[in-house]
Length: 253
Length: 256
Image (tube, rainbow over all chains, first blue to last red):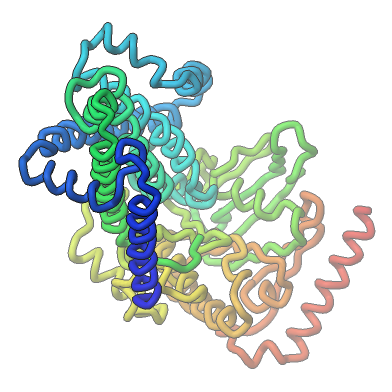
């Protein structure tokens, strides 16, 4: 495994080298195709002068707030719809419609409702995170085998006990897979939300850099966003591992 | 009221159909005396699992009456433990917590309960696995855990739905012997569903054969107790198995 990792690092170095040399030899304009060294310098500069930090905090805060809001509401709605069949049939078409409509197309109306700035972006992000949680919670709560449901009936468990001690734990792996999807979508939601209505944040900075034709800064921002996304994703994987620590591989039914 | 005269489980002309499908159980009479070990044999789809669920109160009969200890069955009864085809353990709980599930759903688990669960696991030969998770156990150990869970509340009766069908022959024999020992110790009434004639004869005082939703015939098993491995190679044992097999073939010809 460590051999593969070494090769992977070498590949990265090689690609960067080829890019750097390619840009220098071809004499391409930095405005079109900035060289890795220039991007690294801009990134370093942004971090050292403190120019980037406020934007990083804004985007991180929007992502996490929207993610938390979307996950909590999506999970709660999933549990409610899973438990109340009538409600599911009643509201499912509306839920679906709300997700099929491109959420970013709702951006302009959110700006009218919530104004420019963080609130609009958080609402868009939450709306994006809502659906994977709802969908996976619905699927997850149906995961307990019929025999286990019968077992809980034989033990005369209440509906609440069956939900808390059988259905939710049985569905946890599926629900957490939804959380992993949601965190990735949350960052996309926050960045693109800022394109539409942000006055600060990494997405807003990309738009500002575009206005200044500063491709080097744009690439530096891409790197920051990518690293941020990987960090968030890794956090959910750690959370998942911790929550599923009791689950052991092996087939049981 | 004398409990000796009255059967523990009394099914009187019960019938059941899933939705608009043809009935899976039609007019079954079955009486299981207290303390008896009764086996229900039948091929897949003969309605034996449905009959077991009717006895458990998981299903409500469409016709006829089902009674436990003289009282009409109205939903799952506390007097009855159920062991399923699969161990149905909670993967995210330790073996000990799985065994304690019937208690922890009702009230706070006490130190005495924990000691009882440890003792139950010890008796069934998996005392060393209390803190492990189901995914770390073999199939036989999982089945043992499920059996310990069903017995932790010491129910007067056990309903068992092919609980050992997925195990290898040697492991299955071990579990059959453990089950016989535990049931005899507590004088537990057992209704045991299986498709394996030899298993039914080895375990049961009485074998009923189901065919297309009816009990085609039943016969007592006049073999001495306690039963042990040697009996499986006894001519009397084999004659009984052959007899049941022949009657099953005849019953299925008649039904067809």
